[in-house]
Figure 1 (cartoon, rainbow, N blue to C red):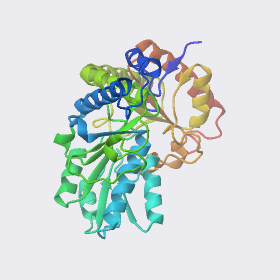
Figure 2 (cartoon, one colour):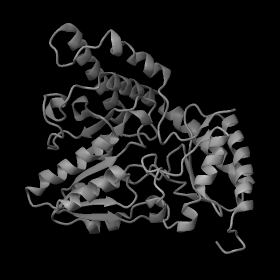
Figure 3 (cartoon, rainbow, N blue to C red):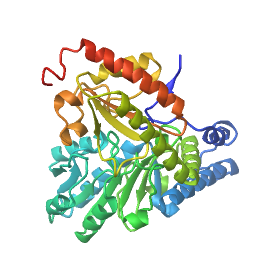
Figure 4 (tube, rainbow, N blue to C red):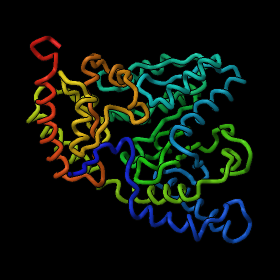
Length: 390
């Protein structure tokens, strides 16, 4: 049976070049980077090289890159530690959006229990933040604004530079979760003006279990973990050496291939959508097509259940998602699709397709053929239909 992977927003396969660079650090170059002897210093130098590679990808200085375990940890570190530090100066308000990843939404819930006020900004039908609403929400006691760079479900890219400029004008720290944007959008943190930015290795063909937080020089962010001097004293614990090396190599490849990657996956995405629109009626495309991640397409197939469609596709060897990988086991409607105004009954018929570097047109042709048959089958046995008014 043919195997087609169309869930690159959930995770990506590790590229062979990345794996080959990681392998020696499991066996030959295994030293603890904190050790003073040669094998330890070799490991320390490898981490420094990875830091330089990731910094180059986003236009940062190497000393502004701090490695951690994941994008989720980076989000928690940025938002919670900033809020707690600012509370000592009387700031007890944070601003985020209704369509954030749960790493941010749950951080907001935690801070609310700690006595913070949390403002959740709404979005328009394309998932875009209203900049005037953002500015109006800022208060004298606002500690931090955190809005994701690009949405993981619908692919909408937010006006990050303009939001960062608003935050700076009001002397508020600005953080963005760039986990989905990294490697898919040309990012220069200096031009964007962001203070903090979260990243993850496994979204750019690197290993899982490694992330990073960009902390702009001059931003005083307290340590997130205590117990050692690693990461300039900000994140204690023996470094994930192999993960960091892999992340660094993946970042280097992402930078070298960025333009061709964006062009190729955009072409594949648009080809796929064109075929689906031509062959399957009663669909809705969710999110902005003008400001969108190159490989993302989120489609509502009306009059069916998305979970049933996902299972039929899986039986045909096609991997897709009904939403964020971190919440795909939940039966609750997507909070992102709710926020952009998709009716609840249609949310349950929504599927996220994301193409990547290993996707081919043949994969997409096979997927469209399978989709057409599966959607027709599910609609034929559905208890609701266009005629019934759903």
